[in-house]
Image (tube, each protein chain N blue to C red):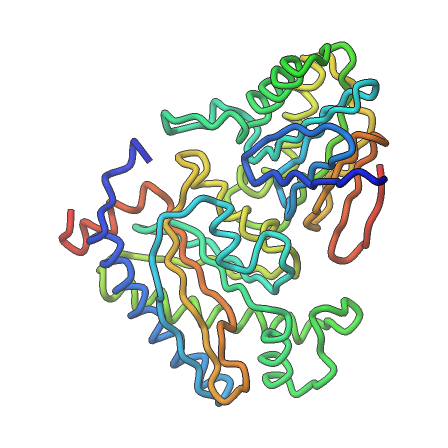
Length: 164
Length: 210
């Protein structure tokens, strides 16, 4: 009998975790970056939909940790740890960071590439290897990660789908 | 929104009123341009989460023709004109007289169609914003509009970067665009004005409600 699969959906500036046979998905990534941390052996994965590079940008006092590359990736790692994954066994795949529009203030226009840089910096700080990425360009992406196979499916409007 | 001024229902009603004034002007311009009766109204002004904002435009994965521009001056923020592909095609085919034009087929998208769409965005936002400026006395300068055919989430999130540094919610002045004379006169498109949080006070003060 086939097990029923559930797709766990992650909104913008949000995170969640998933165990096989379920998959985890976030849609409409533009300048945002979808960061997947996964544990190949335990078939468990987490996804955070990062919107801004650094929590130092927060001007409010209610900080949603999932919104920023630095706090988001760290919190996701902590959540996977509570599920029994050792940080040493985590790997990462990322997608997103487009430049959807070519104007705005300089900081805003470069927000996609800045998000990607910040994500890589945080992964390296936490010693989590980045196994694959599909970043940059000027297209939106919808991504879905399958922890059973450790693969990330990426769909764009004009370039179809690919798997990393 | 703890460090923003307290936004009451009365404030949202005021924004709805100025949205309606802007929308009426924009509808007149669009009707003249397309020689069709177009109506626009502001069904609601709401404080919503970012995901709820995408839902207003059909969900984050919904593919649309999106025009984006920034507004600067006494009032700063982002403005989006989001149309389903079919509606955008209808508008542009009528404007440039090319029945083959199709935003969903990259090969058929030529410069003329893109320029026409940007011009449409220019005229709409221009008439909307000049009405807003007249009513509030605030100086408002729109940037040149930019166009993208992609998923709602990818397009609209770009305009949320500024807001997201302050909050996880945004005030949306959502304008519904309805074209008359079609079988389906349901929601045709949306026009979103997302003021930057630091502009809320400027708007309310100019209208004497703060």
